[in-house]
Length: 357
Picture (cartoon, rainbow, N blue to C red):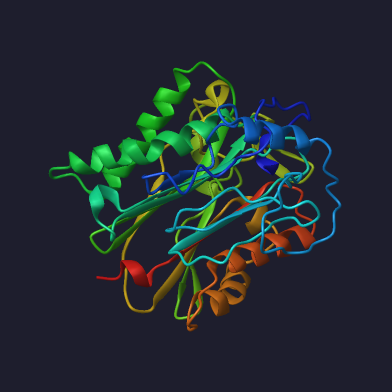
């Protein structure tokens, strides 16, 4: 992400691309893009083919998966039905039509490694009205985003379940902070911005740390549910300077200690005094006018406004016998890329009517 680099030599990791862990045999309703390629020989072969892929390939959708193809950098994932890894030689993505309550689409940016991750957990405790969704935008490597995608939902739910008189906002905060503390003990570099949505008992609990953003369509009107955490934000600037830090401008971007362009994140051990993991949280009762939720990394929001995103996604997410949230995510990714986004782009759409009580 653009916030990651004060110098161009960011660490990289060995995994070539996040792969959906869904398979027709999997009994679990969870999908996380942090899964590894190493345990699947077929995936290893595909990963080796990535290096031969021409990123300037033309776009052509296909319905059937060929026997052996190069993996593109852009992937699309459906939701509630079991899904398989998709790949196509000349197209940025191959789709299979499948219904679902959410979809997500990711596209790698200019760097050789995809640092974004996502997580989705459906039917929490067997309740179809409870779910967790997250987008994680890594910087300085993928380790923090990968760790958050695997662990933050469990940490948040554990804190929610032991709530007594505390608010759910406090429980989510403890879940974020626990994830941050545990990752820092891993003694590895890098960090990750996060935006998460917990749906429980008819409430939408949206939290963020960093510049990933959540936007909801309410009767066709875009409503931002999060506020980006950047050093240029006055309250964040005041907090950093009160702790003895400084911010300065580099090529038009305000950075902490001349380094990082976000002021909150999981990880960032070297800047932890100023880059906190404490999220801001908003709780909304899902109502009949609340249509769908868009969670996305700043690779989208740097090029597409909140209302544009809603206007593009809405015809595909409501008011039709065949809803196409995956197509909506794909269109948003393509729009940001066409406007010159060089960052990783991850977009998730969640249909809220399913969770209305």
